[in-house]
Structures are given as C-alpha cells and as structure tokens.
Length: 203
Image (cartoon, rainbow, N blue to C red; front, side):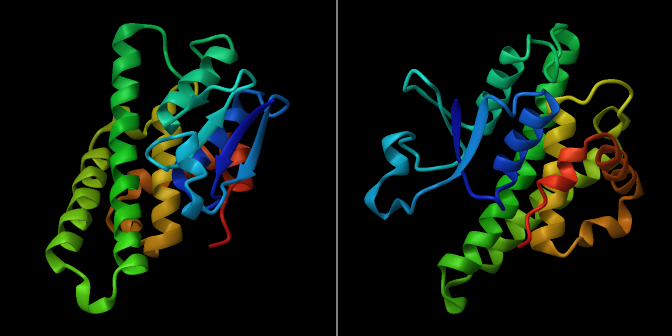
C-alpha cells in the first residue's frame, strides 16, 4: 500500500487524491495525516519538509505532487493523465506548471498572514503574489487549450481545478467575477470528475 502524507486543505494533496480516484488506484493508496514537523518527521522523508509525500512499499519516498501524479499514471498503465505524444505531453505538463504556480502563490499569501504578525506583512510581497495569480488566471482564461476539456482529463485539468478550488477556499472566489471561461471549465470538470467534490476541504 502506498501511503501519502497529507494535509486535507492542501491543493497539491488534492491533486493526488483526485488523480488516484480518477485512475482507479484507491485500493493501492492510503492518505494519512502528516505529522507535526517540529521533530522533523516530514524531513525524514522529504528534506524540504513539504507535503504531499508518497511513501512506497519499498521504503522510498516520492515528492512533489507532479512526481506523484506521474507515478500514478505509470501505475495505471501510462498515458492516462499524462499524454504519451510529445506535443501533447509537454503542453499538458506546462499547463500543470502554470496551475501549480497559482497554488504556490496562494499558499504563500496564506503563510504571510498565518506566520507573520500584522505589522510584519509586506504589501509589496502580497502584491507580487496576487499579481502572479491574476496574470496566470488571465492567461488561462484567454487560452482555450488550457481550459477546454475536449477528451480525457489530464494533469493540466486536475491542477487547474485544484488551483481554482483553492482560490475559492482561501481567497473568497473573487477570481470568478471576470473569468467566465474558467468558471465554465470548473463546472465541467466537477461534472466529469466526482472526486473533485469528494475531496473538497471544509476550511
């Protein structure tokens, strides 16, 4: 059994949960809460101390979510959520990278308020991260090849859905006001991928 160390609200963990369910791997994967890292328990498996971490049956650890999703695709026979054709493959991986960047920026904005006192908040830093999110979403809104679901669900779709879901969870869904194509994408994705609703975090 593959054990995935996780925090339920993490959008990167959600990517793994959705992929595992979509690929029919839930009988081979178990998601377990990550330990408090004050004793460096996470760093014993990932020197960066970040989740998700996949602990394989042979004792090896895989990280980050992009590597774990590629491993899941391999277990499912390959070419399921990561296309084998080079032209589609690298475009899909680039779409995933864009969505992951949105998640990174949103997580950093959360850290700014969670781990720094109000008088230490940096307006310049906050504006930088908010700008990354806005620019990336505007780019995705205007690029049909990113938000269209013409065939099979891939890692780009999964990552984008998780990024938008995390913005709904942590940023109040303000992204929706001027991006109807992304709103429509998320509705289509949720309709085709039941695990999206099943993995929604409460907070």
